[in-house]
Amino acid sequence: MGYENSIACKKLDIHCCCCGKELVDSISTELGIGPDCRKEYTGGITPAVQRECNVLTHRAAIASTEGRVEEVRDLAQKIADLGLTTLADRIRERFVNAEKNVKIVLVSVDGGAALAVTTPFRRGAKDAFIAAWRKIPGRRYRNGANIVPVSEKRMLWELLKEFFPGIYGKGPDGKVFRVPQPPKQDEAKEAA
Image (cartoon, rainbow, N blue to C red; front, side, top):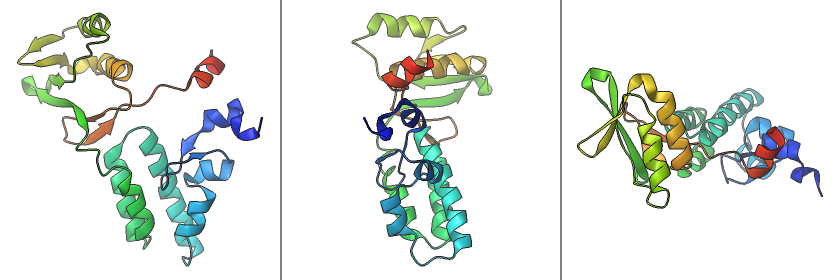
């Protein structure tokens, strides 16, 4: 069993923001970009620009794993502004279909006191899905959407993580986000 399969490496696991492959060594994990992509996309730039780009790329990699699509796009633009347009384009490519794939929509209602939440219905987990919605204090159903008090955003987020991991949504500010995936089985066992 190689070091890349160890629990410690899996805990640190993120993906290259250019090609999407898993990163297993510390330098690649820190920078958010693998060694092959670093060679291909960093040639001919000054060390200062490279350091700045590495920081931005790392931030984009973290934001992408947490589903903060708009932040990834903003960071890609900053990378392009440094002159690394190929790298910026590759980072953007990974999220080109995010808006087309939005399945969850949150809209501010009741003067900003609540969110109208529309999601796909989970037929396979119907009873658990309905029960999870009903557990949210102050939640009501109106015009095809669940209305959730803003004070209960945390419970709403937990519901979305349970029933819609990896699914794209659009927040009340119009920004696209991605519901995070649960930890891998090995990581969950190790944490317990």
